[in-house]
Every structure is written in structure tokens, then in C-alpha cells.
Image (cartoon, rainbow, N blue to C red; front, side, top):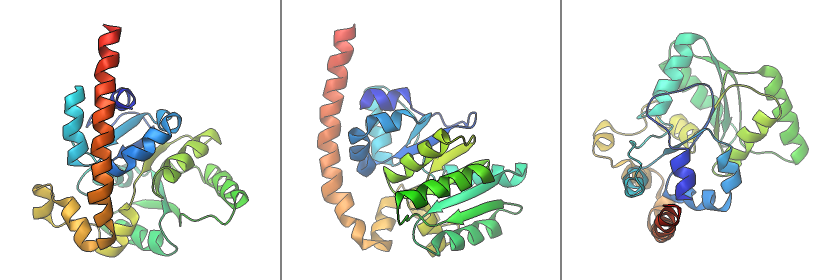
Length: 236
């Protein structure tokens, strides 16, 4: 898993249109179970200060980057508004992406929203029909927040269906924007890297993720790091 993250490590600068996803300690476990899916992505950012710091042990030094307004979302959406590229938002519950899109259109003057859709599908047929519809709409940017691995799989299937553009997973970004506005995190908590604490305050159900699930992540990462260095020595 460490080798996969190193090979897809994303620099802070943006590149050509690509499929981009973000891993945090919670989704790291999911990525380990679906390595083939995550290899389809051109770039994997480290979403969370903990994972960014731990990856330095593997020789990768890049900043924490997330698809939210404290990080890459601001750059991507500002660029889309400036350059006239259309954005399609997918994810969360019915009504949420609509509210998030209105908030973002008010924040980014000139942002063109090609459409929105919630992240639930009644059947495989409905999902396939939506993918075909999205290919026909051909938005330049698609942002998907359905949780891993569903959001990654949707972007990969969309690309396989013939869509060519810039795709980003966004986790809870749409929900956070609809609920808290364009600037979800208090500025001082962002500066102090306390975004995780604010999320627990705002969504107490996440406390399990930041305690039990993250403890499991640390054990898995330690094992993967040992395996990485053993493989590195064997190749030397």
C-alpha cells in the first residue's frame, strides 16, 4: 500500500485533467482492500495532517491536501469559475447537493454548475443510466462525495464510459457546505490543524472514526511501512 501511495503522491501544483482522490486514516483501510481501484487514479492526496506526516517516514514529503475550502476545493472551483468550465456535483442525500451548489455559486462569481445529483441509486440500472447521462452532458469537472470506495468507483466507471475531464472525490464536502456554508471550518481551527476536532464537535457520530478506526489505521500503517522497507532492501 505504501508503494501505491508513493507512486500516486500528488504535488501541490495542479496538472492536466485527471482522476484525483484523497485518503485519510479512515479511507486508508478501504484503499488497502481495493488497490486495483485506487491505481486507476492519477493522483492521491493525503487528506489529514496525520497521514501526511506519517508518509514522511516512507520518504514522501507533501502537504496535507483535502477537497474542502481550506485546500484544493477553493483552487479548483475558483479556476472553474474563472475559466468557464462547468462543474457537476454528485453525492450526499437528496437536497444536499442542490443547497451546496447554490452556496458555492454565491461564493464563486460565475461558477457554472452543469447539474447535481444525490449519491443514492435504487438499482444498477439507474446508476448506469446516470453515468450515460453524465457522459452526454460532458461537464469539464465532476466532484463526487459518496464515501470510499463508492465515490472512486463512480469516477472510474464514468471515465470508462467515455467521459474525459477532471474528476475529484470530496468525501463530506457537499454535506459540510450545505450545512455550514462555503467556509465550514473556523479559521483559527484550520490554522492550528484542529479540523478533526471541529468535525467531532459538529458530527459527534465521527468520534468512533477518530478513536477506534484511527487506532486500527496506525497498526496497519506500521505493518505496511515495515513491509515497504523490507521490499526496498530486497530490491537494493
